[in-house]
Length: 70
Image: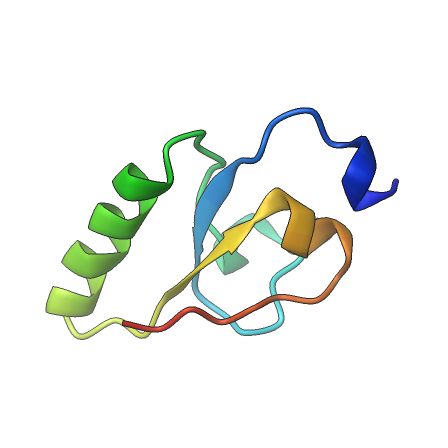
């Protein structure tokens, strides 16, 4: 799958820097279409001393997770 084939950008919280489309469920949360919502979820987790980032499905499709830390 090419990232350009994706119809809608989705976002998720990732718990590991190596998360991608083939990661286990423990490496990332569910996909969501609202980036602001995912950023709020990540911020709540950071408030609980969790090291998390966010990832788009386009980033995951390229298997190149961009770690967006807060």
